[in-house]
Image (cartoon, rainbow, N blue to C red):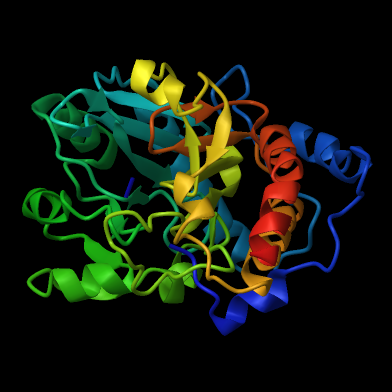
Length: 338
């Protein structure tokens, strides 16, 4: 169902203990942030930010010009009627596509994210997260949203094994800059990659942040057919949304086969390979992964989790992820002991 790595940078992001163990008070800080998250007003405009801050000479004019550009773009977007794109939150959209396995018996679906940047030098431009094979309706929607691709700043590969549609997408949008995981860069040398995804994340700050799960392999996961636990997890701050491929699953309507495997509709799961090759077979890896998830919940103020397979958690994603990691602690402790 296509890995995070134990690379050195991740250890600095890990807390030593789950915040607020045994209570929900560690999530109370989120309530104030929700009301200030820049949701659309009745007129369709964003609430202004930082109006009371001091400005340097010329900064007010530049900020006003950028605001005018963004407001014009807002008005354009509000008038669009999409066929295939689903709006998840402010400036964030998702496309669902088919991904069938077991001879077509099971459609796990897959996805692509579209994020608009609202701050910095790339304000008003779009970032495509992962890639899917585009139908004519999908292509038409993306073209309407991005001025026929002229406003696409980057196409970003987020999972080492979600690769099949990148050549197709490059044929549609060759002017965009392409970024990928190390495996993307090795597998498709014919695509003129601009850089590695995680190493380039500052290009899209502060709207976008990225992390890879600690305790598992990101560069070259093995075995390739099953080690799909983690990927680059993307946080889009304006929409309070997380985009994730395989680390987390939320099946909308699992068929009989998946229900027999223990999957329930609408419930959040870790990828099944977490119990197999997904985590390094060391005592430390499961604990690193556990602390990583708790730290992610602390660091990012999110409501929505957009999963590749096959559904989303909308509105209470942060709470659902907290429930999942708490209920998984015993399992991870047992993996440490094996």
